Image (cartoon, rainbow, N blue to C red; front, side):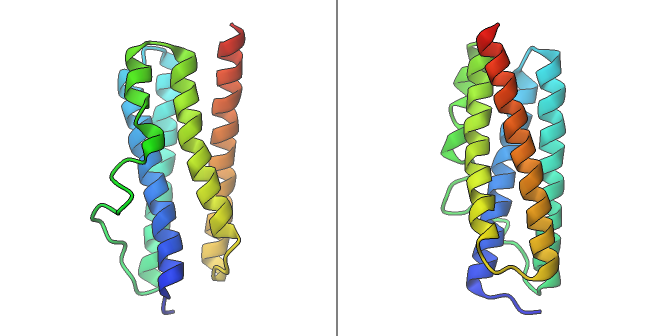
Length: 150
């Protein structure tokens, strides 16, 4: 199966969002003191790495390799940049807010991708990954809400 530029761009954008999430969660896991969040962030980093592999595999099956070089969007999406300052503040609410903000961008990217015409197997993968990203987003949001109330 050949791949057109729009399809490649859509999948590449999802890969970039997953890379951002993986890097953001790995950074958060390294620097957070709360053990429950450290474990959760590591879990989400591994999840995103797995999602990257799945998407890259789909591109390969369509005869196109993912461009491993940095995209024009930068190596880390701006949504994750404030994470470092939140981590240094040791403020659980701020850290969770920054993670949720990063997830907002991932959810949006998946919603946009699902509006496009994706071939069967790719559509199924993107749909499942969207559910995983949305679940992570909602879990982070509920943890943030609980931390605000504490």
